[in-house]
Length: 286
Image (cartoon, rainbow, N blue to C red; front, side, top):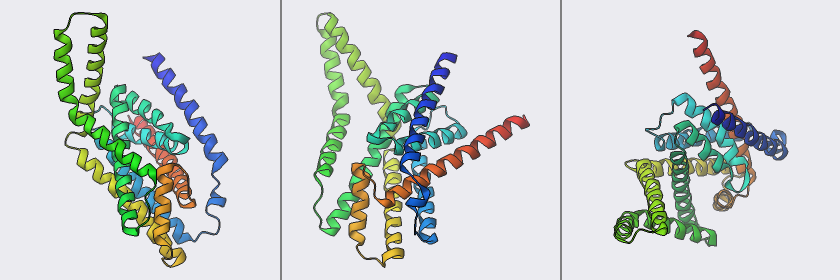
């Protein structure tokens, strides 16, 4: 147990150091907010708070039933979120899976929960992109079509898996005993455990997770609308929203998204320190 904790702590230190390095090399408060009105900053801060509240609530509901205290969850969320948004190519998601799996005492649950969280967030993002681009009449980028196909395939696989699992398990159990057969049965058993964990996470909560994802994106888009009205009197609004959503999808960053990321990192650090201070205060009283 001590060895696992030691490995966990070292992985945390190394990953957080890498994220901090990326942050300090790419983000400068003065440059990002140079010449920006105070009202603009207030809107960005309010947006960050509301969006992360919705996202934290979404993931907390997905983890419902896991043995994680609200305090431990808050600290873990504040720790993994900056890593997730700073480290490129979504590699920070592996750190999220690892940390939530460690906290839940079930690595599979951590992996499935984060995958479901990303799945719902991607569905909501694609929904918003399709709605906005259909309303504006612009051409949808090919990546959106690929994502739609991917989401449909994954959904169909989840729907048909029980039937396939039942058929192949019966077929293999009736077949002659071989090493290959045993390996196939083990593979089926592993896939079934993954499926059951997906059902456990999404059962009765799938729609709620999707709605929370839509609300989070609606808040972000609402902030783009509000900031556009403040700065340029509503000119080029459709292009601004499309550019923002496209940058969120492909991983590039507009200046608006860069401001969102910077404030998000600062907010996560502040909340983490506050929760940590409260925990220390409670332990000292005991």
